[in-house]
Length: 331
Figure 1: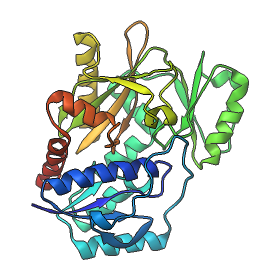
Figure 2: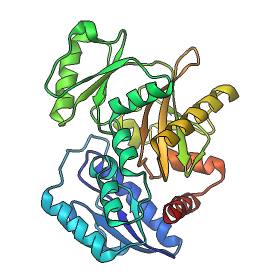
Figure 3: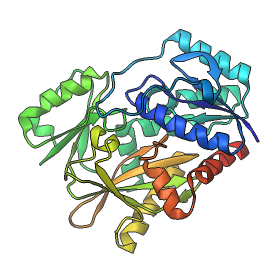
Figure 4: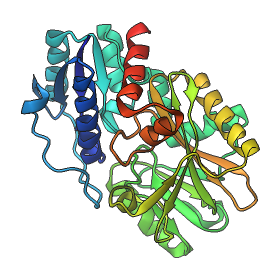
């Protein structure tokens, strides 16, 4: 069995979700017999055993406040990684430092195996606009859209037609996302994203069904369909309040399923991903798939989508984590 340092919490707007993912993964990894220490980059003074880690509460139904790592915290994190010398760094950080390539680059410099994707893949995937351009280069279908740099406005004539989605370019868990029927609301939505410290991505809203495809160690898993019970869209509250149904395998025809799985595999391979990822899709009323984004460190809570897909594939949660860990250790 291996010595594993599990990173969780962190500074991003997805901190609460990361703590929940980290707790679930820590329990499963410890159950597999690994020697486990937990570390929050916001409190990097010492790595703690699972029994001593202060988890606090689980995910809330409101978007959390954002924080940032300072130079002292990063230096202490480096010191901890060097002193612990784990056989594996298991990444449960969602967003920010843990998902944007910085943690991966640090582990690469220290020659430490990491459970998630390398630095270049992480940096590209975390940036939704860069991902959109990458997808277009591969010939994969994406919604019309444009990036609006922080603090700037966009001429109304440049906006995509129809209902719009305005969202931060480098955040997940639907933090800061708004769906707009009225054009006059665009400026307010942009200001809300800018207040989070990010650029804004404005896309045409694709009506229809919401699907996701997990990829684990080179293998695509069954599709999951996401259906909020109130008929709304899958926002931060609906993700974590229990008001959503998940259908897996998704009731989608075989041809569409295979296309989405093929494109998901193609995207992961082209980016050079590793570990477990989740690629999100919309299926319009005509049955046409559109790729939204790829998540390099997807959620691993009891409500998360990758574990649901793994279960449909025949892997329970410990088996899923064992596969992710083994892949990182042999890389």
